[in-house]
Amino acid sequence: MRYTLLIIATLVSVNLMAQDLKIWNDFTSKNRVQAILPDFSYAGVFYSEKALPEVDYKVYNITDFGAKANDGKSDKKAIVKAIKAAEKNGSGIIEFPAGRFLINEDNDEKTSIFINKGQIVFRGAGDEKGGTEIFMKNDMKPVGTPDKIDGKFGNKRMKHLEPIIQTKHKAFGDKLAHITEDAHKGVYKVNVNSTKGLRKDEYIAIELANKDIEVIKAGIAPLKLDERWKQIKTSGLMIKEIHRIKKIKGNQVELYEPLRIDVVADWNFKIIDYQPLEYIGFENIHFIGNFKTRFKHHGSAVDDTGWMFISLNGVASSWVKNCTFTDCTMPVAFKGSAYSTAIDIKIKGNGGHYGVRTAGSTGILFALIDDTASQWHATGVAKPGVGNVIWRCTYNADRCWESHATQPRATLFDCVKGGFEKGFAGGAVTSLPNHLHDLVLWNFEEIGEPNENMEWYASDSKFWKFYPPIIVGFHGVGTTFDESQVQYIESQGKKVEPESLFEAQLKYRLGKVPEWLDSYKK
Image (tube, rainbow, N blue to C red; front, side, top):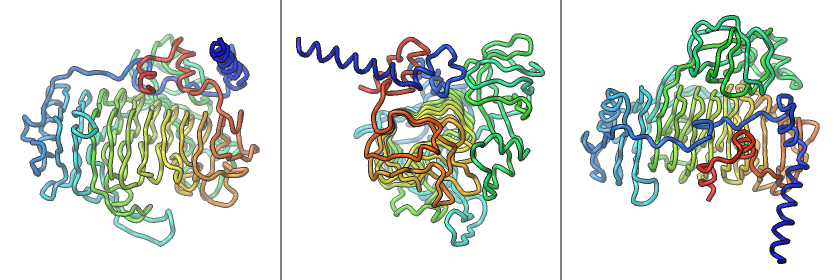
């Protein structure tokens, strides 16, 4: 009986916490379009409504193309041949049996392994002992501008090295229309001057690139435009938010996903074509680099980009799951991509430059990523992306999540555990601010050293410049914030219910948390 009463009391307490959480009540109210919180529940493949695809494409086992595990010889050409065969077929699983396979050996060309079409999945036999290993012996061939170092941190010009496996797809296309009426974040409909070229179920991007100085000032207010922020003055206020069309009626376009940004028609928002590669996946593989030197930030091209494994440019409905990355400068990046997922990822060994990251993407879900390597920038975001979610990820106390400037918006760090060393967020002075509207920290657990009255617009540094964030349930070692630089703060120092905003918003939309997502927590 005593235990029954205890359970009842606990449930009542949890329910009261949820009922008393003002910002959550605001989101679930009838006037939800006016709520402070964006709706992050559309992140991930299939908007995270169901499990990642278990595709049954034709299998292309790399041993049929000349590869052999554990023989000490390069398997790079065999992998390329298998991909080309699958692409010719229209789809395929590039299957790796158990054992170690070698790429970028001494006699290999230092060129990327390209995936040029969708529906290509790399599948191994597991990322743990006895599974599949892909070992990269040498770094890549430098490309780009010549080395030129002026001795000032952050002002180095150097060559860069390409990822070993990548798509290089240009998904963004031509202008199709422009938006004729204002639209508030949270709505699903926009009015356009023309629907020619727009089709149901196809992707579009809502784009803004406005160099008018008054528009820029209005777009970043209450932040003041700093003369050193050259990028935003040169490129303008930028947004690229990717959507899929649900319905077209007259000159009104209804979207499957809500807007994450406010649309001001007078600012010249456009609708542009977006045609990504889809259903590209990486599963059950241990990727091992040969990066053994002590990492020095911007010390050289090899430090920064020499050991990058997977870069997915212009993809949608794609994924990386159940993979480990050891001794690399970057494990995985999504660039200009949409509604994709990286889940159950481990980053080990010698720490490098980046964790798992997204740049200029919409609706990417990073879930259960454990970085014990202390990548310089832990898992996070960069460039003008929106609606990206970092869910239940962990990293070491001596680092910070990445927020690498060039106008990211609407990012959720949800039930994340790690350090808060602000020098590791990233972003050159010329590309600041680090993040614009709707950075949300929800039940963030800080480890490491506490900060007292921490600023979001640093007065003691030219770096670390943020639009006032939304902070709910921030807890751990006792950090406090300068609340004059925060848009909203609730339950400082204490966890809140709902524990996970991403899960709660999914439940609110679907009626329950999808079983596949729950299964990953067990």
